[in-house]
Amino acid sequence: MSDELTPRERLRERARKTVWADAFFRWESAVTIALTMLLAFFVPQLPAPFEWWQWWYWLLAGLVVEAGLVLAHVTDPQSAQAAVARLFRREHDPRDIRNRTARQQLQKALDYRDRIADLVAQQSGVLQMSLQQTLDDVDEWIAQVYRLARRMDSFAADSLLERDRRNVPNELRALRRRLETEESPTVRQELEDAIRLKEQQLANLKAVEDNMKRAGLQLDNTLAALGTLYAQVQVIDSKDMDSARARRLRDEIHDEVAELQDTILAMDEVYSTGRLRE
Image 1 (cartoon, rainbow, N blue to C red):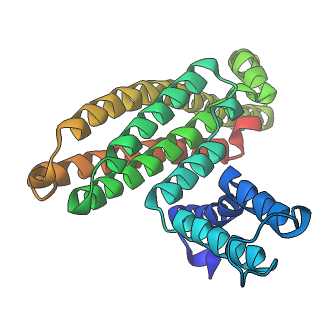
Image 2: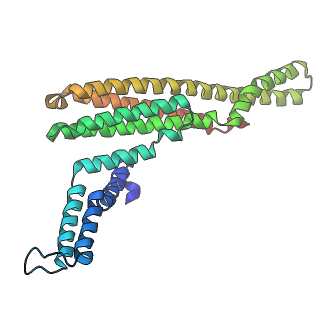
Image 3: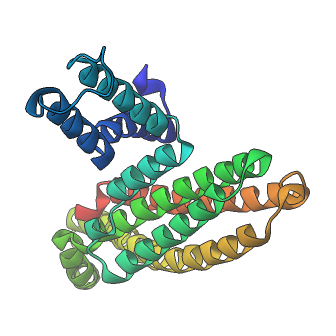
């Protein structure tokens, strides 16, 4: 069943488990448990609050208080949102990115995400629900930014790609010079085939380079667009959420996500052809 969940739904499922764990390990729970143990077992000489009071009533009272604390925590929407934010940051940690510029851009994007989440938490009713959908879209947007930054890291760290970018143009020129002087039809055919493969390899290497440049520009554009979105969310009200303005806002986010996905797919497609290393 969990395999059928979307990444966002899986994140929320893990967040629910985290909220339950947090409920038992908060300092309030620790104080309640410690005080209950102290009153029940370590301070027997303490006067009972009532004549009919039994020592094990302290255990029962502590259990009731602890249950109330846990229930209050797990039913608090802010606890769930805090858990989602914490897990989201853990899964999209800027420290995973080696490229310094991309790492800084991802960190700024996450900062915008946190500020938008704060604005969502300040709202209520229909407005909060609508803004929460926008925040979910922002999370998908930032997830694509993270994926793109990781792809950029992978290409930059590929020593074979770097070697091919240096060597393939020289190898292609050498093959063409040989073709100019070769007289054997059989050898000329083999040289022409080799040149065609090298030309394809060079075209793919150029496509990788172009995609890297495109990815860098898209990260810049994403950060600017997130800044604009943050400013728009600050002034939006409940009437706007039912208007064309709200739909346009979400459509713009979906377009940004789709564009990032297209770039990632283009990078993967070129990289997976196998021709880059022939």
